[in-house]
Each structure stands twice: as C-alpha cells, then as structure tokens.
Length: 159
Image 1: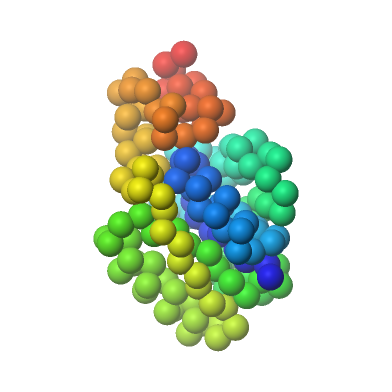
Image 2: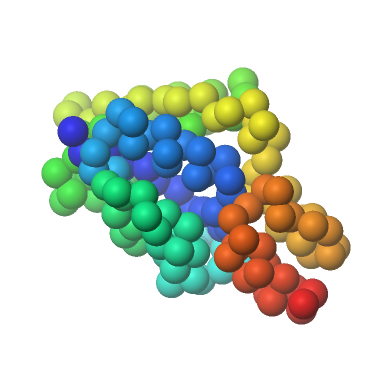
C-alpha cells in the first residue's frame, strides 16, 4: 500500500528520518512529499530540502522524495496513495494533526491518516529548535543527518 509522508522538512531532522524508517515497515512505497509552503518562510529552498532528503534516504528501498505545491489530498490522488503518514512527538502535536486529518478526510473520504509516535529520543526536536541552535553556532549533529548539519553551517557561515 502506498503512503505519503508530507512535511516542510526545513530542515530534515533525525525525528523525520525515524518516522520514514518506521513508515517503511508499514507502507511501501512511501512518498516523502516536500511541501513548498511559502507561508512558512523556509530557510532552505524547496530544491535544497528535496536534495537533503534524497541524500539522507539514499539506500532506503521504497522511499521516493517528491516536491508538491497543492492540497495534500490532491497530491495523494495524483500519486494514487490513500494513506497519509504523520509522526507525533508529544501531546501538543495531536490537536493540530487531528484537525488536519479530519479536514483531509472531509476533502477526500478515500484518504486515511495513520499516526506513528516518534521515538522518545526525538520527542522534543523540531526543525525550529534545530535552526535556533544552528544560528547561534551550536552543534546540531545529534539532531540532524550529517549533510543537513553541513548545510546549516554553510547557511549561517559557521564553517
């Protein structure tokens, strides 16, 4: 069964990779859908985010990385996927994720949302926290893949 794991991934974190790996145990293929989402004012361009993901999932069989700039249910329809995979870190994530799942279901009854809990070591890691650490020159190596860490350092002129 084909599923979509959507996100902005600005930047990709080890928590995102955890959800991808665990999602592959449930769904194959798994499309990692990188949202354009200019309203979020991303640090990295869509192309950079796609490249970081492709580099980080290299060797994971069954993962496809694709950009999108439409309603998620429209992208799911285009991809012939009927499952949206979402990761939950802690309870504050649930409210917003639940709301998105309900709206997606109202827009397309054929799209189901499946939630997986992030491993405890990634519970409090967000892309926003990673960017904040990086902007002040902190070491983000334990929160993101190596390639993402290098790109953050370059982006903030740290190395």
